[in-house]
Length: 158
Image (tube, rainbow, N blue to C red; front, side, top):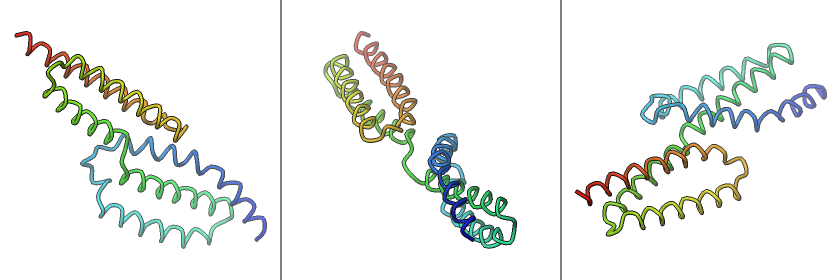
């Protein structure tokens, strides 16, 4: 029994990697996917409970492997229902686009927004060194803002 506890503790060191994997997988799931629904979360939770209850009947390594797979499933469920970097990017772009539309000088407003985005990125990086997940989302925000700014500039020039 002591061997199982030691081995389980050592295998627990995989959790940060599993969390990162779950977060990366969650980013690939469309926001309107059934995988993000409460029904799916409930079914996955029930399946995890059933699987974990029966996993103890198997040899130690198999049992611990199954436990880690159910942990991954839990981490994925949490990541799917949480706010993703893509959600952040979409809400930021929406607000920024509205500001640019209302701005008298879209160039100046775009510069302000980019500065705010840079500060936000700095805060995120300091608060969470593993925030590299936000880097692609922030790049998307920058690209979308540039397109919106250019489109508004063309409209004003016309």
